[in-house]
Image (cartoon, rainbow over all chains, first blue to last red; front, side, top):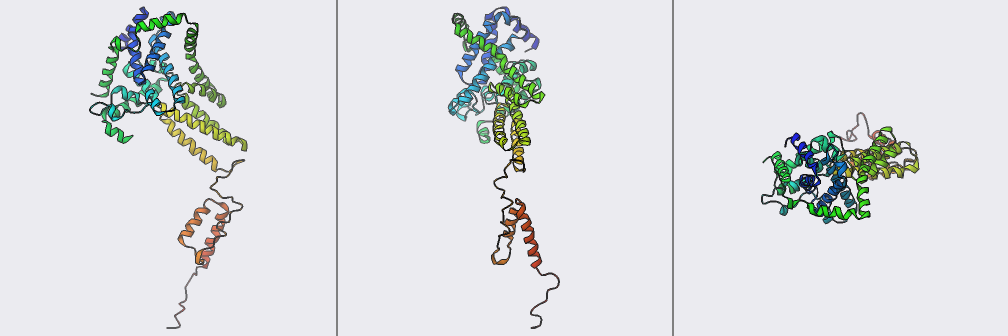
Length: 182
Length: 232
């Protein structure tokens, strides 16, 4: 999508909260699903982020990049919840459900043994999956990705590069070959 | 389909997601919004969360500022807070700062700081491991370098630093001196064993050199007379 057009569309969403919701909710849902396989977390974080936007609506309409603000709220919330879960994690099942799961087993993959894109993204290290989802799935420009993730642009680029390289490997090779390498 | 094609297809699917697949419906969101407006605790909790969004970033920036000023103790304190919320590369910065602190502590410290050094190394290794898991692959090299430097420091004699356990006490070791070869002759295996030990023990090294010299002097040199020559 053309960056100018995306910018214009995003600005138009500020005409009302329902318009903002309709534009950003599929994006925030897709982003969160690429970060965790826990459906409850996806629902809760999407809801809390949107509620935060609605509460700050008067302030939000004055922002240059309201979408970036929304994604920063969601990313911060997800990082905190995952950090807390890692601290409290006592079983491997919990870890697998929360998303830091590594690769799905051969039985959970498609008939050709290849990984689904979302599974592959979820198997990446945290910073890489955040950066690649924001830049390659949601088409945020690199400076905005860096701002959302709280890092330098160079760092964000490195994470996207590493993530893409790993995704290429994961999506190219069938399950048996990958499991042999683990 | 190549990676760009796969990503573009996924991006398009996200943008075109039907409303019934959204994580939360607009009706549910509005209902929750109305409910929270009359719930003071929920309101306060929500406001506190939004206000706290800047705290992780602020802690990280404070860490960086102290780091730049060379105040490593304060830098570690603020990086630790930022790393607890998994902010950016705070875990990597925390690991590096603790690594430097351990190095500095070892360079200046007496007996009492050795425990502190070990504690710093352990925490730094944990921080590096966390950073590695988050996607900072360079953290693995940093752990290696830190542990190698720590091992080197442990081998250096210094005030209050005990000698490594494997190293025998130089003053009292008599391993080579007391060694009695079987049949009075040193075998190859015995020489190798003694030289390995001597390489790590200064006092035995001297004994080993003496032993080798003595063995060498016992070997006859020059032309050797044939004892059976006159019998022929």
